[in-house]
Image 1: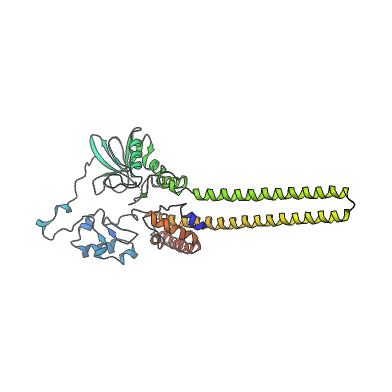
Image 2: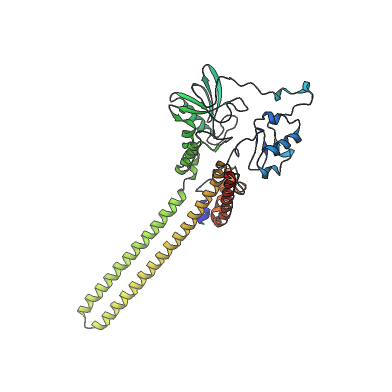
Length: 397
């Protein structure tokens, strides 16, 4: 019963848009199904004339041994890229990289900008030195509110639009690319010194991260996500443990009632003894009255003792049950965070990512099972930690 009630307490949100850095070809393996995604084809990738040559290059330049073993033409997603024809005249125009909006911007620089148009929670148009740049905010991924209508997409869009109108805007370029494959500028966004990506994450309107490398402020955004989940802000308000608070209040109320009953029983017993003692003084049958008084007192003490023992047993059972649930909850929370921790340290998960899903409602159903069987979940966690230690040791070596 307690496990079923706790299913509604926490919705795990540990899902990942991507699994990490791009390789030399400009792509990477997706951790959930080992599909290879060719995001930004480099010159090395463009040197492949067909799928077989591309697969050979992937195997030679990617370090994910597990996914390479499953690599086949069916598991490669070119994301719109097509191979060049062997005849130069038939070379498709799509193989020529589209020109970027401007070559005036540089990596690692900060530029003052003005807002031209707010698109959604993580996209807007800015004017920098007379040039309009459609900008994708670095590192965060908010719910959609344009072509798709996702929960909290409208709230995320409204938060961003209001935030961008509060002061001076500065854009800071960072990472490995100035522009993405859709020619959108990639930048950190500051308004009067406040980092937008950090503030909207604290507000609870960021559902995911995208990570193609190392970014300057990613630690601040990850800490903001922890804050949002701990304080149940925005989309994470549904995780607030209302059921646990109600149960604890009910337990305290029942304990208080039991204590009041015991006190009243003690009071009644005292009155009986006092009354019998008075009557003993007024009668000649002193011996008989004393025995009756003693019997009444003994019966009262027995009754009180039984009630106290019953109350202690109830409290003990409640404490044991709560301890089991809390332990399971802690183990489950650490389990859902473990893939993010390992990916953050550059190590692929072994099992954990296979036992969780991007769709929250599937993880919602699994949470109750994981809490009830937390001791089995510990085995997976131990395996992941051993794998992490070995991988880190090999990396240092």
